[in-house]
Length: 522
View 1 (tube, one colour):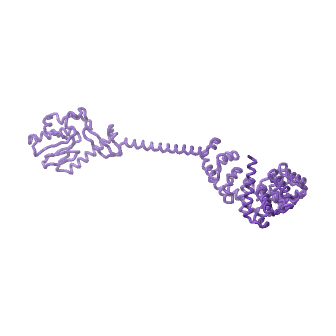
View 2 (spheres, rainbow, N blue to C red):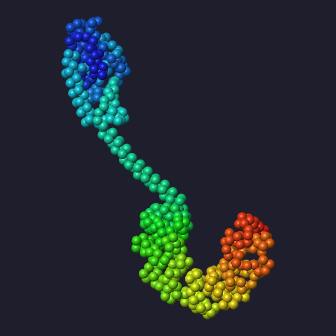
View 3 (cartoon, helix red, strand yellow):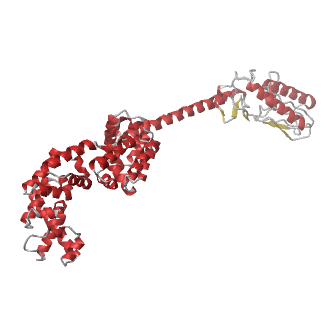
């Protein structure tokens, strides 16, 4: 019988009934091999051609074996197969000698497989209890252990070693640390990004990350770092407001007619508005304006003009002010809505003081009757806000200087109270000079057409007068001031000309005036 044993598998080349035992020990293997050879020699003598025993080996030359090599179980391994019959052994064993172990009886394949599986199981159990060698640790990965022995390499798939588990735990901990590191890096990048977006604000204030959502939201209304600093100086707690609450309040303002571009103006003037609740504050104030007769389309404009309105109590402040205007000043209840639209600030000022001081001044200075002063307030309630010394009195003195009497001044102011808001140098004086020198009118004409003082000299008065002069339709005497009152279309129809020709003339005149002013400045 010839048997080739490789990697613990039996390859049968004859039917000679012989039994071989596979033992994991190399020393046992050597003893059994020696006994087997002696038995064969005792029966048949030297090996014949009909029966051969071939062992494949990668170390058939004993000189290249390490003399101090040991088996996986700690036993010494001899570089020779046997101490008794070494020379004869060399004659009978070829240079392809194998160190693999042999199987059981070839006639009982089931037993062979069973024994092999039991041996492999015991070997695994034994190895689990032993510490791994350095080679095993270095060649263990992904649940596969590559085990090196004297002259073979046994690859087996087994359970994960404790070293592998520790490596995975290390990887897990490392991943957690890397995750926290990534979060830290992202936080630092976010802080850096925030600092870059609000650089000026970061320099002025100790910027808190909790403020960022609110600041980001407010920037959608055009606010910048300098605006936030100004708001902070006026109302420090505004940065503590929750962004959801701020959105609710500003969206309510937008819903009642406040324009998006005016939100910035409101916040700069009244940042406290971010802290006013919608249900308990804002809705009640809007309802108050509606009760006064303010149309819904005008409420947003009133809020924009007087955002501090929300800081006054409806019952204790706003309603008493409205009653005072009706009962003390003499404004009709139906006219309150118009008065508030013209000057929303009238609701947030001490009307009793402003009304009394201005009423007494106009009565004493001009002899104006109460009815005339009430009409002045109704048409131009801003009168109650103007300074007497710096605003009202200088304009009254100008009208006196051009030849008007007090009664004529009262008539002009009753009809056109906004004259008290016009600039003396840039408006009233140039119009007066053009009236006298170019239009050849007398001052008394202003009492009949006080509107002339409210019209634009460059956009209305001069273009129309020059246009009619160019057409040779201007009257030789005083130019009628009534021609400046109607619209451009009505003016052209009145004088029998086309609107296109007038607009072309007006455009050229404006360009010439601009060129002349530019040359004088140069």
